[in-house]
Structure formats: structure tokens, C-alpha cells
Image (cartoon, rainbow, N blue to C red; front, side, top):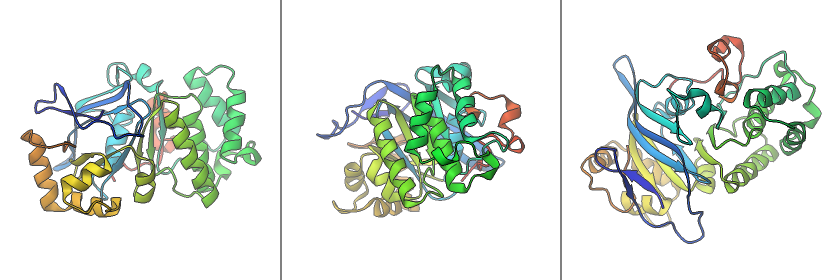
Length: 316
């Protein structure tokens, strides 16, 4: 079943039973509690709390500036956590950073590979970071899956946007992480690449990996996500299933995610949703509040160093 946090964020509150035919979540892979961050007078995140289970795909959506990328970068440990806590597979991102990041895969929205490493060397480097033994066979499989075989000896600086995206996804998949964060993963991909990526996401979830999928391509989120987390101005607008969103937001039973998105992010609805959560009055679906950067030093996290995590915006 899905879980929300109760009023003091200390005890989980069960939501509706999992609909027939969907995966029954098991182990809690990601637990975010009270995540907050400010840039000057602007609240980028304001008390965000949620959980993601093994095999679950959480669709993270919201307008520009809603705080989605800030949330992902905070979960990944790229941005220091100033308010709240993040645990990955039971490990605290702040106090147990290495253990947490060993279980994390990260695909930024505009990956910047190392210019002087080949595609294959990026995979070898990732295997070294994560301590993956006998990685070659898995690397060959990923090169074929994402149509990178012909580019195996190409340098990172020679790759097109789409090829950089494929490489970042392949590097995230290589160590079979417990959690994968995807920020606009299909950007720059051609139709064949999009189909391969979508299938790979489905297969990874089926294998038990938890995923957060953040994208403005709402049809992609609607097709792949088990649950939705809609954020607006750093605050939670809605968390639950599509069916629950239609009921809670007063839209039609056949409404698309696009219609749900506009309903959830309107000023009046978003404020009512926030109030309902804080007062503990939400119903069946309660309203809630890198790749190489995963294990690299601060020097390699520097965008000027050209790491795979470079090029992200801090807040989008």
C-alpha cells in the first residue's frame, strides 16, 4: 500500500489498498522527511515528506520553479541538506553518505560526461566507483540496449546530447542500484531511444529498483508512474494514484494527467491541498507535503570539472 506521514511526520498512515494488477510495494527504499531549502527569501522546498518502495515508480511533476530539481539534487546529496532528512535503503544521506550513495543512481537533465574518457571508460569508471566486479558483460549489455556500441570508443566531448543522455542512463543502470533518480531522462533522445529508455525503466522497476521520474512529458509519467507527487512552489500539491487524484481534485474519471496537473497546481487548489494535509483531513490519497556525483569528491562535483552530474540547475 501507499503511505503518507501523519500530522507530526512521525508515524506512517496507510492509504488505500493497492489496486488489483499493480505491484505491491515492499521495502522502503527512500524516505524523505521535512525536506526544506531556501535561496535568500525564496522557499525552494517547504516541508516535503514522502516514501518510495522497492519496485515503485514515483512520478514527480510540477511547474517550472516548483522545486523538483532541488529535491532531486538534495536526495542525491549534491546539494547539502539544510532542513529535514533523507534516507536511502536505511542509510542517512548526511551521516552515512557513502553507504547511501552506493545504492543510488542519478541521471541529470543535461549530463556532461568527462571529455577525455571514452564511453566504455565511463562505464569502467562507474564500476570502479561502485565496486562492481565482472562489470564487462553488464556493460556490453547496456551498450547494446542503449545503442551505444558504435560509440564505445568515442570520447565524452564528442557525444551528441542524445548520446550523453544514453550514457548517463547506462552508467546509472550498471551497478543495479536500489534507487534511481531521473530528471527529464528522455531529453534529446530520438524515438528509438525513447522506446528503449521507457522499456529499460519498466524492467528496472520490475527487478525491484525504486525510481523517481521527474519530467514535463506528462504522458511519459502517466504511462510509467505507479504514484504521483505534484509539487508547486516547493510545497506538496498531491501524492497518490491517478485514480485518487481524479477523485480528490474533482476532475473527471477519464481526465488525463495534464488536466490533473493543472487542477493540482492552481493557486486555490494547491493551498487547500496543503491545508488538508496539515490538518490531517486528507482522504483516501492524502495530500503531502549523481551519476558520477554519487561517490565522487567535491572537486569532481564541480560543474567546471565536467562530471556527469554537471550542468544541472539548482532549482527548476
